Image (tube, rainbow, N blue to C red; front, side, top):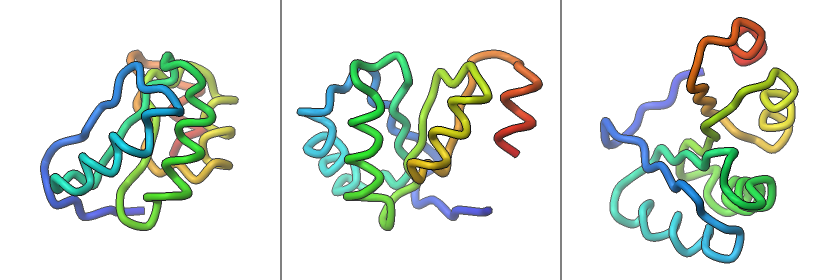
Length: 98
């Protein structure tokens, strides 16, 4: 899959909560960002990512960072994420994501 982004940047919403996710993503999308990462060490990341994918998945590349386990890749794919960022080299995570 290829995604042509408008900016050569990814908005990383570190520590975002489900209560704030939609408003913040709306603001960064309105500012021109179309690649957005919510790290998995954020509180209740499952809810935040689910909300954001449903609301903005057609307008922006939504994904997750701090992905450490292959099972997380599967869970994120099931949620509609299109971007996976891992902070280290875990061959199992990379194989699952490709």
